[in-house]
Amino acid sequence: METQVLEEKQGQEERVHERQVIAQKDMVVSLQRVDIYQEDHLVLHDVTLELEKGAFVYLIGKTGTGKSSILKTVYGALPLVRGEGIVAGYDLKKIKNRHLYKLRRKLGMVFQDFNLLFDRSMEDNLRFVLRATGWKDLILMDKRIDEVLGQVGLKYMKHKMPHELSGGEQQRVAIARALLNNPELLIADEPTGNLDPDTSDEILRLLYCLNQERKTTILFATHDYRLIEQYPSRVIRCHGGSIFY
Image (cartoon, rainbow, N blue to C red; front, side):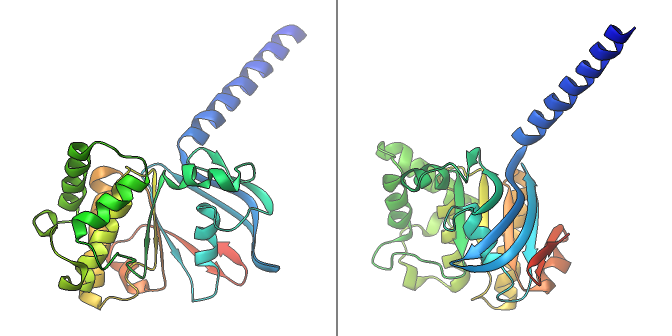
């Protein structure tokens, strides 16, 4: 009888472990009990954050509440001091600085400033990134550039220079650039901060469609609560040194 009970208990524990392993595999981001510092200043305490594949999550809060600090931790710009963190299969505590490029190849990043090279066409901006991330075949590079520009609605404007584009179009190029290497996670840090309301709506709609149609996992930091009302999704709020769901 005791043997049977022990075997049943062991079987239950094995099934729980299997579910945990499966759950971890489905998580693109898993932060557990993390403290986030900017130099010696504690910005956020005891952060637990999980993003499953295909999620669209808003990260909201006033300026200075820690939104960008969370994003910097996720892509390895801030070291993980306390807690556990796994992003795109990489352990943030164990990864060496010289290997951070491997993590970042699995991430796409879009920022408030478009960060385009203004002496190159859109096509050459994207080709520069492909070469920098190890692409060699020119035919495959051109095909991929057409694919991502097509996804953001700019395929037939690829020869234009950045100064010939509107702010919204420049941000679309930045999104296309972020998609080049099929990222497991797209990080958007205030991507509409420099845009007017109508253009902001267009950029959010584009990101939302990428999530819904292509299952791109997106972590979208913003302080524009109006956008969230238009495209409701899961919300995480930074406030007072903590995060709230």
